[in-house]
Image (spheres, rainbow, N blue to C red):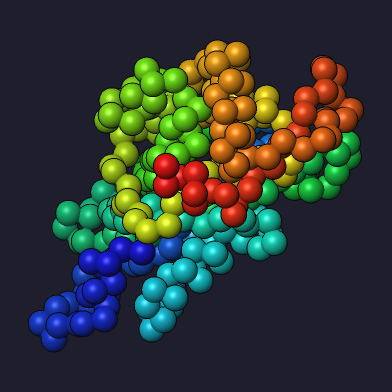
Length: 292
């Protein structure tokens, strides 16, 4: 997850102070993203503090003896306090943030080291009266309507969202779908890549991953199969930029000809607009497409 940090655990130095002597606690904090009622939402369940109920990112204490496996388990455990384990379709790592606790931190070093992860939860079908929807709305908040957050929650959320956005922009499918002028503005380091970054504050660069090409983020956020309109609207909301429908459709159908997305002979049902054709992601064809 964070090779430098874990290296200290694997090869401790006798001269190095313990975590207790340093005065910080290590926690695994996981931000869960989910599409709910067509909005990209983030899991921020209520927790009780000295100021009353406040929304915060779910965290868990890792097992130091398990090293990387302990961090992975803690990240999943934190996510399952927001959604059931069966609903988690993807888990990624964002980075490490350390926050001082209280105003006396300079005199009495006391801080929490957050090993930040992000997760994607399956979208929920909008079934009238569904208890799942009611429960989800107790935990999830639309990114477009974030409440006031404490500095620690805001910092952890900013770290997770930055990594989530980087992975969204980096995959080969997104690079083919987005117009060059929009993609350039979102990937060249300019501030305001997403409307949510301004609300969250500046976030540091996320760790990059090498190896197999990342599966596009929308695969976990949208239902399978999905209509083209849902994919376009997800990009528009995430990036805060309108996309030309005709150009987006043309690029999308060109991608279909290469295999990673397949058109199905079925259409939407029960929608108040013209029923759109449904599509599915082909994992077997993805690596070949991403390598082009």
